[in-house]
Image 1 (spheres, helix red, strand yellow):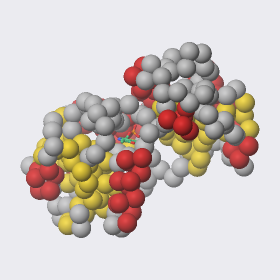
Image 2 (cartoon, protein in one colour):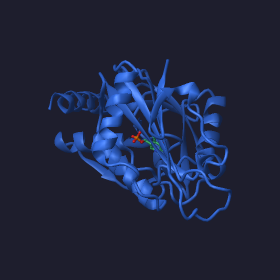
Image 3 (cartoon, rainbow, N blue to C red):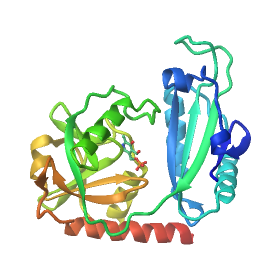
Length: 280
Ligand SMILES: Cc1ncc(COP(=O)(O)O)c(C=O)c1O
């Protein structure tokens, strides 16, 4: 039985109920986080809580809990669900109020958490991706629960037998429907810069950190669609896929059509970083 946390109470997930007037349900007026848990311990918790704060600030909602309170909640949630490798889903909405677009004057945010088992990716045999026009708004840096565009992109990918959709805005690739993106071009790793067109992924940060430490050269700059299509390697990153190689793009092989050498190097650095993170 999955145990969730809703507004101060731990309870079976199927008993966690909210009002139909919750602004998350009515307006998607809320933000979320997905935190990977390895052997019962949260990975990169500080970065996830910092990003949660950034998202809350951007929607002008005060963080309802302190860092210590969040940490205690996560520990309890993980224990109640039996530990192990898990992912935590955390959602905060502006709470329950009669439907009116402007913010309600007094309202208590809704806090929802649950966790589910997670199988960390092993040496990946490679993912398939398609491309789609990036039709989203200009606040993609907010981890908003308003994900209809991303849902449609992922569905389009699934219908094409692919795992991810990479998004093209004004001739440049931004990110995936639920991931960031890296390419290898003439031996250099390139990833789009952090701005309002992408979510600042925590795994993206980890990858940049490990590459820097290993003296690998990388650039954070726009990637034109033509460069994407000529890339020797393409990787995607997310908390649940870590860093995974993409071997076909719109049905055509990427590079050799196999996971690349630089991906393998970064995958190993990522695994090493995790080991060191948890042994601290
Ligand atoms: C749109 C988008 N970009 C990037 C990411 C990757 O972020 P992270 O590495 O923090 O999981 C996600 C993750 O869900 C996402 O939804």
